[in-house]
Length: 212
Image 1 (cartoon, rainbow, N blue to C red):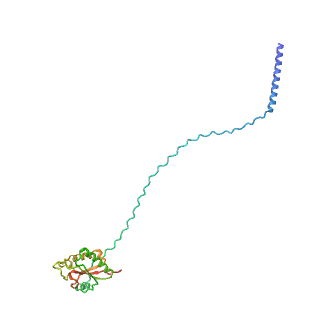
Image 2: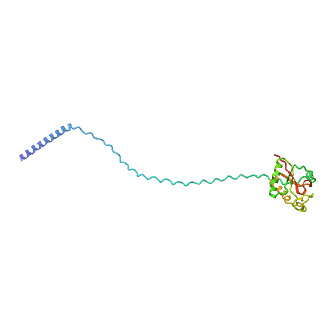
Image 3: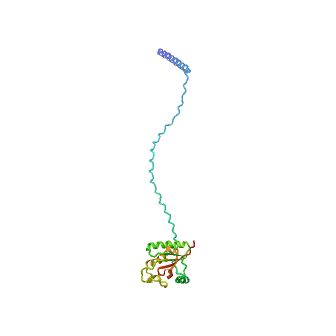
């Protein structure tokens, strides 16, 4: 029993001595080693997932060309019509008596005897307008007596234009023409002429005063 106990103690001591020796050797080696510096790594945050790019919206459809509203046409300026010339007037008593007696100073005369109605009307207008422009007041227009058997001069009242002896065509048309607005600008009245100035085939024509 004693032997076994002795052997056991000797082994324990040798073991302890070897461990101490290893520890001392480790410390020597450790002193010769330069420790490696640890690099600190910065944690990089995870990259966020990029949202899927949305496709660009389609371009807006072109707007139809808007038609400009039709501009209202300016109201046509109202034409102010010139006042109608005065109607042919009856001569005063004194002038009428002078014409009836043939006491007239004739300043110009126009002979339409033998003219067609169309030609006679044109020449009458030109003659009257020219005489008025010259400032004349009393002119004589000769129409001819016509083919009526009653084509003779008589002195009568205001109905002389409708009596039988006044049946020549130009004799009938002259009062109608002179009563139109185009002639009334220049003419103020007319009266059958005295026999010395043509009688039943002529007219005294009185022109308005030229104030131009």
